[in-house]
Image (tube, rainbow, N blue to C red; front, side):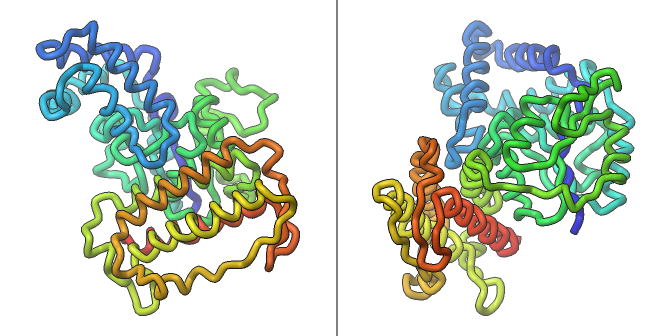
Length: 395
């Protein structure tokens, strides 16, 4: 199986100096809207929108939806009035920021080598920007998306979490169909590239600018961008696997699932939801209905029972037959996905509040003695299987 390599963009593939870049970006966008918006109003609205994106953990709302819901009301203007001006800024004015950045030839060499090895590559940049702004920066890095077949580029139009959340990384893996081969996240920033990725269960590699920046006491690999190729060549890749089982990783997986399916099915026409890939295989609509009903009729009641009773007996449920019994094929798949997301949010609300409750025992009809943690792990495995199925069906 090919190695999946997630690559941060700013200050990993491209020298950006975000401490200089972000103020210049805000100023440029503010100047572009100066004829319509007072800069003294614009800056707080931009910062407020960015803060809300960073805080978002709602798998039902993309970062663009989160930003827009705050930004345009704060300005007192309709999105339809301002968006054409904003779009022109990203087409033209944003380009002036290139002079702040510098390409890294070693990064281009790494990416070319990785593609030659058959790796699956992802631009795992913080999705606080629209896709055109990210693609411009990729071109500045010498990695134009027109020439390099990246499997995924994360942006605020379709992603639901920023890189401060471990769910950002599980959303990526879900969008890729939960690849089962070796996996690495490489980036420079400990607080957005390394710690959240590790919390999501990913192996990591921290990119440093100089050898002197290597810190021997860390629990992860470090090196310059040109050293990453050597490390990947010399490392036993069987050890570079996603792992989950602790509460933080499980929560990230469960939170990322509805977001990933929303991204996979974004913009699909109704006939694609209803189309059966092959005889005996599930339609997208049937997958969404199955996830909805398992969450509503199995996962939530089961968790509530374990938390309310001492070591309760948990029945086994045969849910695959519901596809026919409940006539999923003739239901609305997109509506079922929204309902699944609502039920998943209810489950997450309960799990987010657990402490020692993760160890509460139960007796399962098939698995025998079990616990909340183990049953939630089974939910995660069930999620992964159906996300893979959804990707294959959506293609």
